[in-house]
Length: 304
Image (cartoon, rainbow, N blue to C red):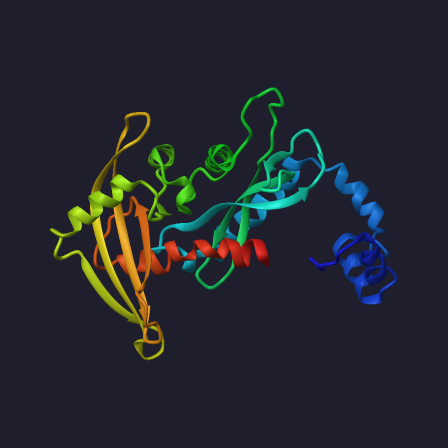
């Protein structure tokens, strides 16, 4: 909360400080801010699940009090972004659960990443919902833990903790696959997944072939001051995709080409996979107030 870099700095700025002592007295009924070593000792005794419970309760309080009600996508769905980020890196083994990566110079990097589910709003707020640690628990296994394995664990926990919350998942291309499509179908979650040029090439080819015959599935809008941002949309329904488990999925694709007056080169292309029903009324809302908000987990989420 105070953005203090060390226990020593916490002691220096918070202890024997009149306004600080008054706040701690009001909040916790103590005479002064606790010593940094005391805080560290207390946190070492707190179970991880208890911390997670507090985080969930904070977000649940905002939802129940309808603080985020007007920020729902299409007036229904809470946007939840799931993405991984690095937390700690070491050049020597830190613990038995470290992930490892061999660098180009032959050195081994030991690191601890984490997967986060965060609720985002169009006006720039990001609230943590749930955390899943990516670490090697099975020390006898021949494969490391990874972001995809953590994703399946996290979404299962998320469904148990918020069983009735209308969630829309905003995901990057790593999750564009049959297990994710099936999971969202089972949980009744809509999704918007970024599709990169090298992801699911058969889906790309099918989209380009089908879109030529969908003459009405086009829309253009202008945004920004004086309409200097031009967006062109194309979309298609029911693109067939068969996954590695021989399950057939029908995917909807939404493409947005965006260009500004100052941008002389080719426009910026965005492409999403989704199970939303795409219409001329909703495509720009789903793109600008849905898929494009995935980046908030990087800036307002991890960085801030």
